[in-house]
Amino acid sequence: MNICVGSYAQRVLDERYCQIFILKELSTRNPVGCIEYSNGVIIQAKGPNNCLLENKEKQFIEKWIKAKNLVVNTHYL
Image (cartoon, rainbow, N blue to C red; front, top):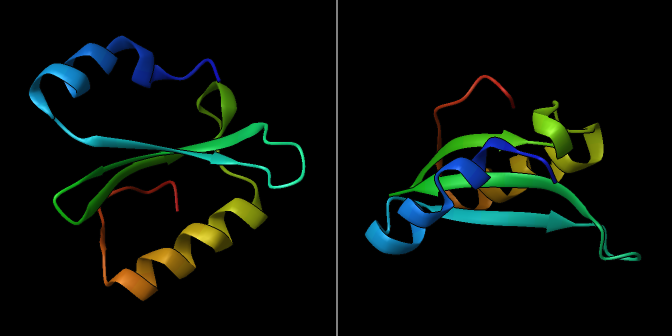
């Protein structure tokens, strides 16, 4: 996806710094977004190449946030 998470992926694996979720288009299974999550807080949510998410992906994440009562600490949503 050409996103910044690649620069700290090893830290995620080794130290459990946070969790990374990849959003995939249901029909094609192509990645369309990435969420960085830690202790109930959404830290980042971006599209490919660190772009803003498309509306469909934003709406999906917003429903998940509401359903799970999560906190958002990013201006990308």
